[in-house]
Length: 196
Image (cartoon, rainbow, N blue to C red; front, side):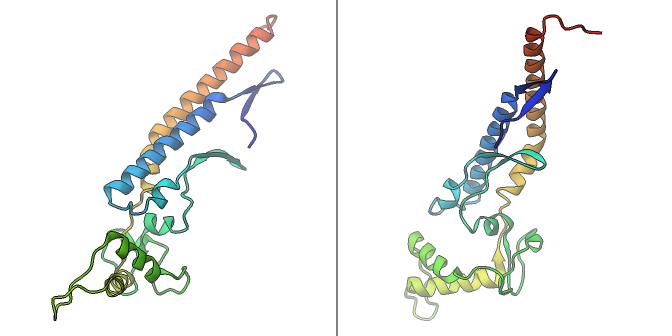
């Protein structure tokens, strides 16, 4: 990534405040996303929670900040997954993901097996009253998830929507400071500058 600059009188000046503001926005966004995950009780192993890192980058449209988690399932947690038979959660039908479509990755049962064992809970058999095995509990849980889907958390998308007005203000202030600094430095270099 090239550092952003502003050109005045043929001289380029760094836009340090813009980069600092983008980094600060990223840190606030990550903090709010983590709070959202904790409030919704979506922290199990911590892999998703800890995989969010702040990255400032540049593309054809300009500079941006990103906190995309580095685990493959983050979008399923953020946008939810529609159930194969019905949707029971609000805004679940907005999700581009659906169980039973044959397009997503396999492995729900294996992930649920690990999750049930880590949480250490077991259902009881209605007939005998005995605890089911972890494997049987995982089967019941994964079947329910497959049919009903996963509730969306919007831990990434909604936190950025809420942060956007503050981010715009922070970027505006940073841009103003960078322009003011560039003008100040340019006036020091060009003491004979004729202002008309």
